[in-house]
Length: 163
Image 1 (cartoon, rainbow, N blue to C red):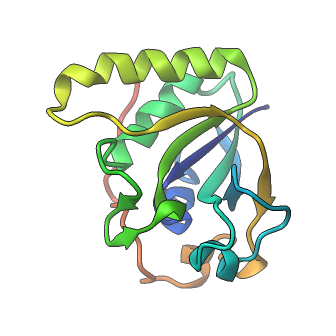
Image 2 (cartoon, rainbow, N blue to C red):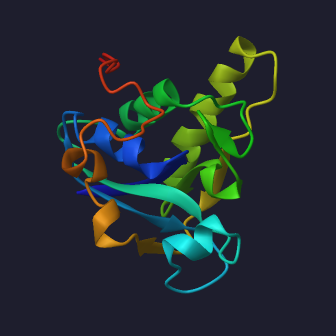
Image 3 (cartoon, rainbow, N blue to C red):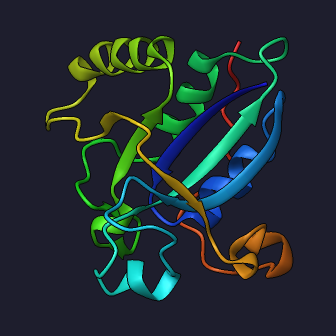
């Protein structure tokens, strides 16, 4: 299994979207690349912790690829929106790709470079090494499964078809 961590606004919708993707075997919502160990949701929301709300995606490389995962990611975010997705605003809602291998970094940069001509504003998705990832509290895991109709900035009915 291969892993990647993506941040694209509120982690509830990002997780719910990726759970529907063929080849994704597990998702975990959490906090990535911040300033302290084991942050709480309250610390992230009030700025004490500088983590991004993120989703750890584990996927089977025999069924999907890093490139396909990232195409799905860019389908559900506005890559030109800084520290914001949908109605969520703040540094915890920044968009990022956090990698633990150079292949993922290279694929990420290649996709972003190919997308640049399609936008009039700069793409602000960060591509960074994964420094840390802490699981969010249990009530955040699979949140939209537990709370149908809960807030989500991601259109969960618009699943990208990727060949």
